[in-house]
Image (cartoon, rainbow, N blue to C red):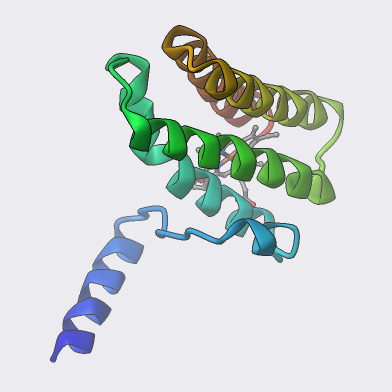
Amino acid sequence: MRSRWLFLVFVAAASLGCVPYFNPPLEDIAKLGSLKDVMAAQATITDPVWTKIDDRAYGERDWLTLRDVSVRILATSDRAEAWSRGSLFDHYDAALGAAAKDLGAAVDQKSADLAAQALIDMRRACRACHDHVR
Ligand code: HEC
């Protein structure tokens, strides 16, 4: 019964063109088999933290989450290089990796403003690459 329900949810999500939830652990990211998988992972990993751009009252759990986003998004940006579509792609992929590193540095300093700025840069890299390359 439960699996049937989950199946229907899956079909509904697929037919709406939703991005699948895909949350690979760090050690699996270098082995992802397609750019689509990398993108689904990037969307799943970053989705919960965009609200932290405006809401900057971070607690311990938020810092842990942001550290995880930094480390795993950096790994996805490395993995995406395998499917380069040329110099613009490389440029924005590097921008995404740089923003992920900035986020890690912001977590080291526990600076909410620097973390929010890194997230803004990250989102800009996603959008710019989609606008110019996809
Ligand atoms: C370096 C370029 C680049 C960057 C940076 C990038 N993407 Fe993508 N993204 C692509 C390309 C190219 C595709 C299309 C892949 C395909 O269909 O084969 C794509 C597809 C997607 C998709 C698939 C669903 C759709 O709307 O087509 C999602 C979701 C996605 N990206 C999320 C993200 C998120 C979130 C980020 C930032 C954390 C990001 N991407 C950063 C290039 C990029």
